[in-house]
Amino acid sequence: MNLYHGQYILPGFALFLVVATLPIWLGAGGHRSDFHSPPNRGGERCIEPKDFMRVEHMSILVRWRDDVVREGNRVYVATDGRHWEKGLNTCVACHGHADARGKSTTAAAACSECHGYVDAELDCWNCHHEAAAGAAARARPRVWSGIATSATPGALASSSRREPQ
Amino acid sequence: MKCSRRTMLKLTLLAAAGIARRQPLLAALAAVVPSEVLKPGAALKAGRWAMVIDLRKCLESKDCRDACARACHMEHNVPNIANPQHEVKWIWRERGAHLFPEQLDEFSGAALADQPIPALCNHCANPPCTRVCPTGATFKRTDGIVVMDPHRCIGCRFCMAACPYGSRSFNWEDPRPSLKTVNPEYPTRGKGVVEKCSFCDERLAQGRLPACVEACPRGAMAFGDLRDEQSPVVKLLRENYSIRRMPELGTQPAVYYLVSK
Image (cartoon, rainbow over all chains, first blue to last red; front, side):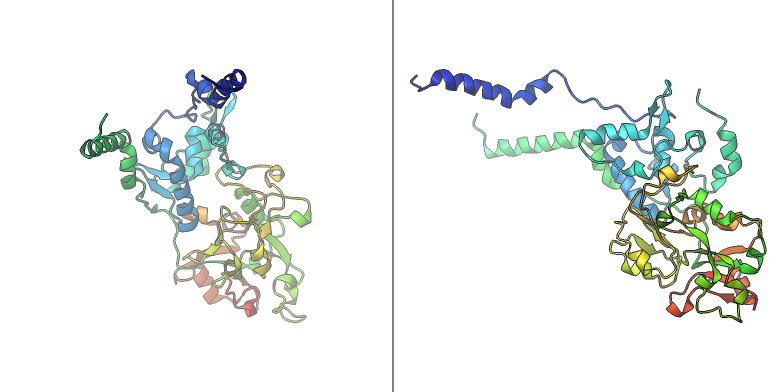
């Protein structure tokens, strides 16, 4: 092979290939970003199946927002027939809480884990309450029971005694 | 490998089937997402919501210490900001002479001129604020309530300029540091949006009356449907003399004040 300055060009080309493909090699060792699921206090089913929620939670929230603020429709009927109050507070009632060490793993933390990864700015929590309320709101059933009995002060007061240990 | 057109088509179909099998939920989505939305039976509904404030009862009570405003501001996380230029308010007291400039003179209604009278958004039938909003962030619902959608508010404050009643406030600063207590059931607002009284649409949806109406110790505030002859507001308005703020503007306020003749 007759290549002028081959002693520089070939190693240089090899070096270029390595650098250019570096991101591939760095990610090769199973270095996938492994996101935590949002914290789940209840352990019950979410409003819809997990796989669905994973993909579609944002569409649901956007739809809920318009339904509640623009249309005044505040009740979501899930595919399994359960009724839920539309609102971030419903999400946060399960997904926002402090963990066993008392460290706050709010829904917002779980949200920003993914949203930060894709560099999507999240401003929901500038106005909505990420930890929703401590005990009272967490203990308050978000399932809409037709009449707002669960929102009476009595229900709030009695349920707020059920503090997580 | 030589790939005939037939093989290519078969492979394409197989690949498509494979993708579809991996995403059964996505395929099912289309059927699921248009959720069936029910309205709870408990919600209060009306053709046109209105409020009647009986000033004869209201001004009688000197010891209520603005129970209506405190209840409202507590319920809706309205901050108490010391700087008057950054003030945020949903319901407040104003001198009668300021509220009814064309109706009071030195003889009729003179007693009201210096009285601190509760004022709030009038939820006008012809709201000037919604006409100027460039994003549709504020709009009138079919039941007459003029609501703010803070998600769409861009903070241009045209609505504040348009409102003849000063019912709207702008968040010049983040309200959260100025909140002593927070009601977790209701969101706060962010810096840069306009806010105002919502006739407690969130409480009406739960079958509850507005917070101010509930809080008034003298029962001076009534709330109801103007289209319903049986509603307390219609009865009060039929039997008493009432005034509204700046009727000459043609906005048709839904907040009525009962005064002695």
